Every structure is written in structure tokens, then in C-alpha cells.
Length: 173
Image 1 (tube, rainbow, N blue to C red):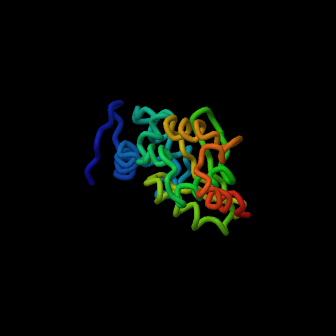
Image 2: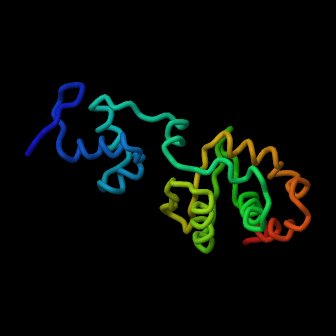
Image 3: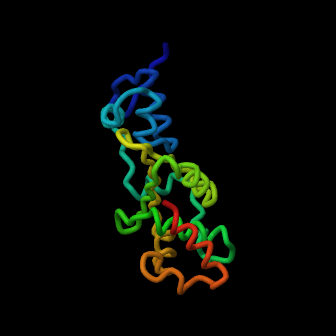
């Protein structure tokens, strides 16, 4: 068994080495906790013990791929529908962060939306409920939605022929 040394000169077990490598490669502590059947806190302790700096929220967001320009131009029914979907299920949780929360009956839509915007982040399942969430932390993405007045005056910025698609996304239960 080969053991590697970390910066603080304590020996790394093979699992710790693998955890650190995956974390530095972009995996989150939550993703790693599921992979290694240990708590997120346990993962954070491994990182701390070996002087691995935790990513900030902004850095975490930049690890994930996202088409930031997706809503630059609302020129088809699909984008109009997704705009309605975001308006219906999205909430602003921080300045540049939107969280979409759906129940299990809309999980397929959340997964399709994630693919549509080329987003690589994992959908989170609530432990005690049949709810799923996707957090999008992107100043550019949120700014574009804000410019469309997505929470107050959305239809004013959309071509009238696309209004039925926006409304369809808004009317999902």
C-alpha cells in the first residue's frame, strides 16, 4: 500500500488521497459524502487535516458548466416555456443565486431544464420530502433574468406570440 504525504506531512490513506483528488477536480463535499458514505463534515475534516482550502461559493459555481447566455435572446417557445418554469419554481436565495424547487412529479422537467442550459451541477433531493432542488449561482445568468423582470413584469419583455409558452411554464402545478 502506497501512502502519499500532504503539505502538513501527515500520511494520506488511499481513501483520503482519492477524496482530495476528486475535491480538487471539482466534486463537492456533498457529492463526496455520498460516494464515500460518510458525512459532509467528515469530508471537510479530511480536507482541513491536509490543508486543502475549501472553495468559496463563487468558486463552487465556477466549477460547474453553465450556458450563461441561454436567456440572452428569448426567440423560441422552448426558451419562453423555461422562463415561465423558472418564474413558477425559482426563488432568489442570495444576490446572484436562484434555487429551483420542484416536487417529484416535476423532476423530469428539472432534469430537462438542466440539460437545456448545459448545467453540470447535481440536482439535490430533500431527505424528508419528495422535493428536488437545483441551485444556479451565476451573476450573469441572474442579471439576465432580472433584466427580463422575471418576477414582476415578465410578459412585457417577450414577443406576444411566445406568451402562451411562458404561461404554460407558469401554470404548472
